[in-house]
Image (tube, rainbow, N blue to C red; front, side, top):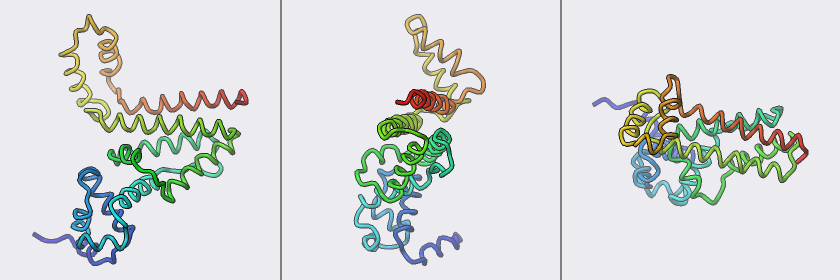
Amino acid sequence: MPTNPNDSEMKRAPLTRDRVLAAALALADEGGVEKLSMRSLGRALGVEAMSLYNHVANKDAVLDGLVDKLVEEIALPEPDDDWRTGMRRRALSARAAFKRHPWATRLMESRKQPGPAAIRYYDAVLGCLRRGGFSIALAAHAFSALDSYIYGFALQEATMAFEGGGEDLAEVADGIMAQLPVEQFPHLAEMIVEHALKPGYDYGDEFAFGLDLILDGFARLLAQGA
């Protein structure tokens, strides 16, 4: 079987922390964080696992680095963004990053040491809110509420039995309806039939609706001088 010349170039390239983390990211995307080990990471890079310790202290350091690489993918508010534009930009970007890396939400919950990208991210988000007129307390409330919503939605999306809408959703809904005594649960049946199974419905669209609801609430608080 012919070899991919890019694979050979990758194995010949000097080992660096960035290369180690990039390979770890690819492995996590392929098989989940649970299957990531120093041995599998070494194999992916064409080196002995012991060589990795010259660049990362241990697996925990790899996992911390993975979180930081994910955060690097999230668009930060621009310096001239108004607060709502900046918050919407970063929320939509964060949700997209979590969709690309479904393992990330659970991993982020378990890490205690934020890396450089995460610290820049926190500061940029808070800075956007403060420039927008938020008090320190209201900025903290906004950060907490938005992050809880983003992570919660991403976690639910990652564990759902279907992608978006269409045939996958219809199959899941049909399975639920087949076991559902409609007379006992009329409201759930109504929501499935009259909303979720309508043409063009995509569960992912719920994210923007909820996000705008939260932003509207903070806009009202800001206008009231909270």
